[in-house]
Amino acid sequence: MVLLGIASDVSYIRKKAKDLRSQHKPLVGVRRFPNDPNRGGTENFYFLTKHGEIWVKEEFNIEERDILYLPSAKAKFGLYRHRKYTILFQILLDKRALSNGMTVTFFYRDFDKQGNNRSDKNLESLTKIPLVDTDFFIPDGIFQLEGTPTVQGKELYLFEMYNGESTKRVVQQLKKHGQAIGLGSPSIKF
Image 1 (cartoon, one colour):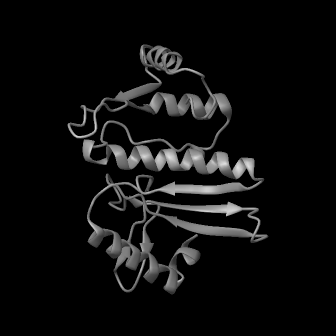
Image 2 (cartoon, rainbow, N blue to C red; image 1 turned 90 degrees about the horizontal axis):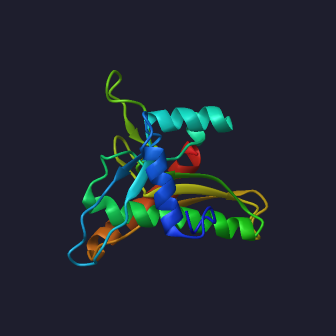
Image 3 (cartoon, rainbow, N blue to C red; image 1 turned 135 degrees about the horizontal axis):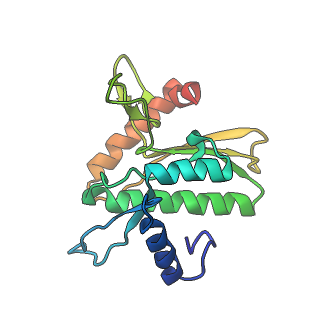
């Protein structure tokens, strides 16, 4: 929130988040993570509750599809840094695009889902890209820029956030990216 310019200080954000959580029907929930023994303290993830989502849609006349939020308490500690830095990248990308006269038309993250598991059993990541036959891969993000200096139209990008030490995994993911680009699958889907 400080990075977005919404507040100049973290204590203000914590106070406002507490106010939003202390209502009869809280608008915001919190997911606390334990300290990382190798890297130190962690930040809390705040997220819209169902009531918060309804309030945002009604108060600001926003379509549900335009509300990007982190799934609630289901986020596992192992995904903490991955999600944190993916969201940080998205914020910085938006700021950079805006300052250079570009627009981020959309940015879907691997944890943004479509479908459902209750009745249709078709829940899947918005970034799922079909490859050959039944093979697919899920990049960490897919976004589109409009108004770039090199291209007059729109450009589609695949994003991979890597937080580990296995170069083998990086090479495997890059091969999947290359295969998808070679097939044109991201452009067909998006």
